[in-house]
Length: 248
Image (cartoon, rainbow, N blue to C red; front, side, top):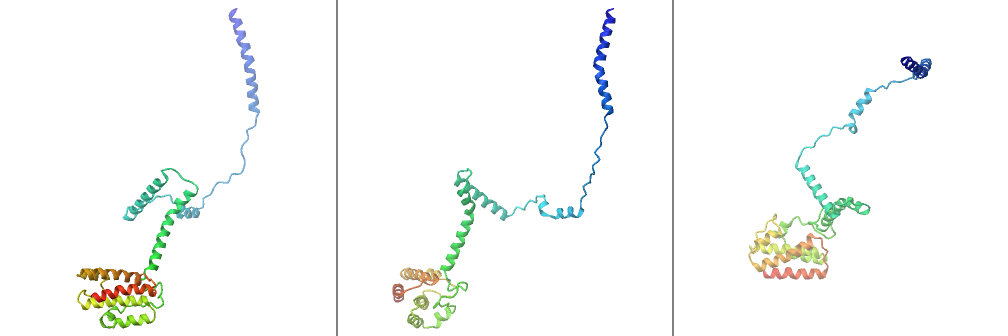
């Protein structure tokens, strides 16, 4: 009897819960399957375009290691020194604003300063008259120095320059007169290729060497420095040249 009652309860339970599932299954079977019928266009690749991209450096991702040369090592050393200087200057921290702009512009400012310095020195030191700078009025480029020292009356050339108030040229002739006199006295061995400092080392007499060194500095400053000499400055320089000339 108990088994019959248990069977009836189980059957009622199955009928109660399985009926909605059957109904749901019928509903699913009645639904229509839908397919995506939209037009799909496959992507086509243009082989010519691919070749053009392959030849474009912007799409070349191959990294070529540069050979290690003295130039690359020098650049690396310069970069390391500069970065160390920046770290020292900024204390190792990041900077912004005007200071950051100034630090970026600093290398260019340094290069510009060096160029300006070279231009200034080139303009000041006129080695007998540079063809790039042009010839100063009244300035002589004496490429016949050997002819003047060996054959010319240099005192007459001095007098002629003074008549034209060309004091700078007169100083030039005074110095050539000293070289002429020193050569005649066998105190120096005058040669066209020698420098003025070579002659200083050749002079054995201490007093003459000191005086000649002094007038050489005056001459270098006036002649090679393109220094315009007025009458007063010339008188002071002339006194030094005449004193040495008389001493020789």
